[in-house]
Image (cartoon, rainbow, N blue to C red):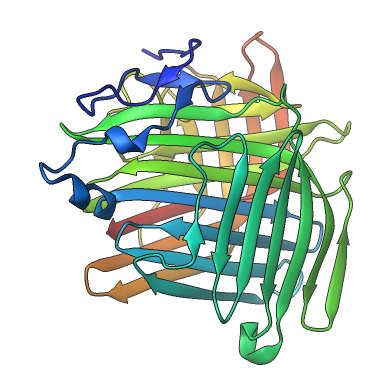
Length: 344
């Protein structure tokens, strides 16, 4: 059921259709969004194309995340951080008409993602074997301020989960998720300054491009952590959107190598998100329990943009069987799982 892509080529053919459908361990396709043919009037295409870079970093003390997105008719930039010990969670965002001051690169392998705004400056750079995150938001949290300079190690051989799938007749989703990137640098939040060390801190990237249905729903689960022996382990699971018959984004990532899963069930109680969640797959390779300890509710009510996300932070425990038949125990690593409804 799962089609692995191994040959490079364009994302879209001259008629605006997906040239290939499937999943890959590395990005194979040139993201030629200029070939999109969603509307007969070409100048309207940009208003339906969604593009975003979402970075997340897990440290022993906190979760930190920064996003730059262009939704076509508006930019959406947000930063949030969670202190694991105190439970303090704070988030701020900017909605920028027509995405003024926002720049996103064509592909996920190199280039700069930039937001320049009077309130905040965000810059994500990918070059060679590194990814750099820079955030400077002086007015954040009533002037408390947040500043981050983080370097993520991302060597070429580090595998990621890339999917290319159709959504209905005309829409599509091209997505790359990279887990377990060793992180170093620092985060300063108010008077607190935390140094990041690569043997304790891991980052991840959710890079998305596509044309979605106006009313959309999805589940996503992710984690990046360490096993007791020092190896890194990551999870990426998703469902609820598009045609997943030829490709899902479900996988376990062990020491930078993707172990592909087929269909994964999200077993949880919508509306009662603090109850434990369970994740199992259709091949008997995955059995995880996710026990939440903190809920993040993110809502946007801006006319044509209307979304609500319940992102739960918690611990993943259980086991997964790898491609070679070995079983790895997941020892309660911190991650998140979410339910997201959007009109965008």
